[in-house]
View 1 (cartoon, protein in one colour):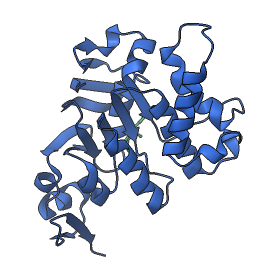
View 2 (view 1 turned 30 degrees about the vertical axis):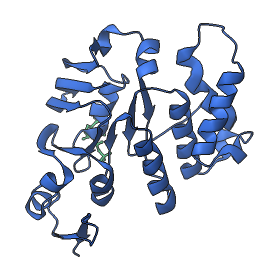
View 3 (view 1 turned 90 degrees about the vertical axis):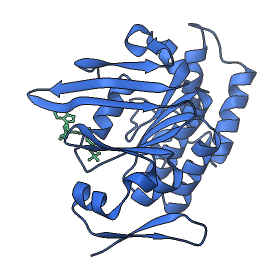
Amino acid sequence: MNICATDIKMEIGNNQILKGVSIDSKSREFIGIIGPNGSGKSTLLKCIYRTLKPNNGCIMLGRQDISKMSVKESAKKLAVVAQHNYYNFDFSVGEVVLMGRSPHKKSLEPDNSEDYDIVNESLEKVGMLGFKNRSFSTLSGGEQQRVILARALAQQTPCLILDEPTNHLDIKYQLSLLNIVKSLNLTIISAIHDLNIASMYCDRLFVMKNGRIVGMGTPQEVLTKEFIKEIYDIDVEIVYDSKGDMHILYSR
Ligand SMILES: Nc1ncnc2c1ncn2[C@@H]1O[C@H](COP(=O)(O)OP(=O)(O)OP(=O)(O)O)[C@@H](O)[C@H]1O
């Protein structure tokens, strides 16, 4: 399923945060959104996953306009791994992941053995099955992030939105999380800070600056020495290893 956001404008207070942003992903494409702090990446993703309602523009999931879909309907198509996840109640890890099943249930329909199997499989995939009965609030930031990914996996959606998904993760789990989501072959839009990670996993990148899209293309097309200087005001070298993979080397 493809995702297409057209001419998204978002004003909060007197601050025009998104100034007419358009991005699109083909079905099963992994899109990265990069750009400096405060450029509007999270705000754009929040518009797509419906935490914010844009002042202008249209967001389509496949052929459906999300503003015309019920929250339950869009939750069957789009799961989210956001940066911060707080619960007001002390849920267990298993209960948090089970929440991913709720879009698939009728009201008051009890959870069944298929739901519990999906919860277990999802926790297994992120290496957190042993934590199933632990209180979510007692987990480390990285462990919580992996459980939130398991909740998204349990939602079994064709599209996934990731907002800085590797924020709290050590390098092993950064790569593990991205390998898992890549292997699912879903349509993914992810805000990513690490340019090397973006180049390793993304099919295409959109570059944001000051609430606008200022560049778009494959990692090789976008992540040039000159463009990185223009966007981040830093000096880098781009090298290619023997496998042909690109690496960005930062200078002090
Ligand atoms: N609720 C809000 N009220 C006022 N300003 C906001 C609000 N939410 C975001 N902003 C501002 O909008 C701009 C874009 O924020 P956003 O979080 O989308 O950027 P970002 O590119 O995701 O940044 P980062 O890389 O630091 O996570 C920032 O200047 C931020 O301060």
